[in-house]
Image 1: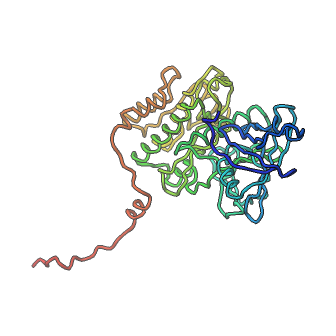
Image 2: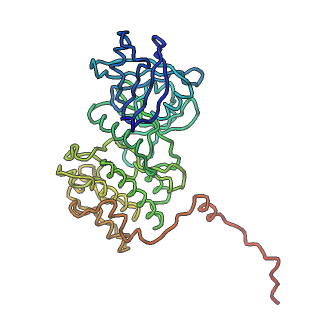
Image 3: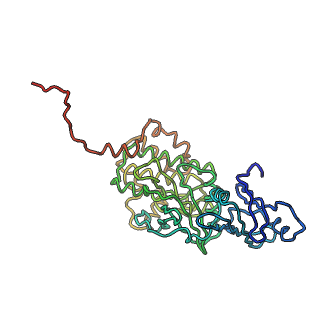
Amino acid sequence: MNRDLIFACDVRNAKNNLPRNLFLYKRNLVINNTNQDQSNPEVGNEQSERSIELTSQSTSISWIYNENLIQGFKVSYCCNFSKTQKSLTYLGDAEKLKQLKKLLNGIVLYTDFNKHYQFQSSFIQKEDVEADQISKYIQIETGELKLVKITKINQQQKLQQELNIVFELNQQKHKNILEIDEVYKDLNEIIFVMKYCRGGTLYNYLLQRNNVLDQEEIKYIMKRLLKGVKHLHQLGIIHRDLKLDNIVFENENDIKSLKIIDFGFAVEFGYQTQVRCGTPGYMAPEILNQEDYDESVDIYSLGSIYHSLLSGQKLYPEYQDKNHLLFLNKLNKVKVSSKIMDIEQRQLLLLMIGHKKHRPSASICLKHQFFRNSFEISHPIENQVKQLCFPNLKNPFKSKSL
């Protein structure tokens, strides 16, 4: 366990002012009695209960502030010894506790969300109007804008699965997956706080460009998406809800800042792989047919996104209502756009949306000929400069023709 040690510092029990050693490991917070005094029953009890599982829904931390400086924290957790809910309060050095909080951000539940964040507005332009709403909040201490997703606690097991995945991704970071800054628990809700992405969603990006992207942009976006999904699959995670609304850009007009978001439907390999979930039009047919499925369902979803990028149209453009869309999706009655005429583009697309037995992995997709030609995406400022109109100036050194 010592090899997994991330951080250590000294704290004091707020109740009796006794010194304690705090050790932070990957999944546990351990608080030891410094003098191992077993003669004191109170110390003995705390000693037996000191290991706190960070990723459990029963664990939460409330930070104690004094003029924006952290003075201590109150941790509530399920005691392994007595199997009851316990709460302990510790005080410590402000700088050390600030370091501890930074390490705990996104890997343990916090409380008192409304003390730290103020609602600003909701995003209204979404492809799927029935999807969970993600809103904009202001962090009161810093004035910084944040993306916030609020999830109702309807199924404890499903929510714990999402928390496990979010906590794992925060410890195994990837540049194309949006990191969760903090996670809060408030009554019957779990609140995910993320960096505010000023570039909006990939759906917004397509709308702003009248559903027309150049080939180099498409290559770059798809390459980033496939690399992000490859990382997920290497960690044993299936996203299960990849779509235009779940791809965002951290910065405006900068596709290099692409991030995958929203792990509400994500699962670990082998977990409930017959459950129907996702967004119609993006779901692999085997999900709708309640067949066994694996991580290749994410490749199908990326194929649907790829089709939209190439053509500006959806895979199922002529559905009449949601039930009709589900029917077409279930039978994989796609209508590949006639706008996709390039052989390499069409070949990769058909592989990605094909039968699950022949669908390639993210790694194999990245080796496809479509990505082999070198391409360069310029910086957004360069794009803006290119769009400027400059007057034609006379060259004073050029002699006039007679």
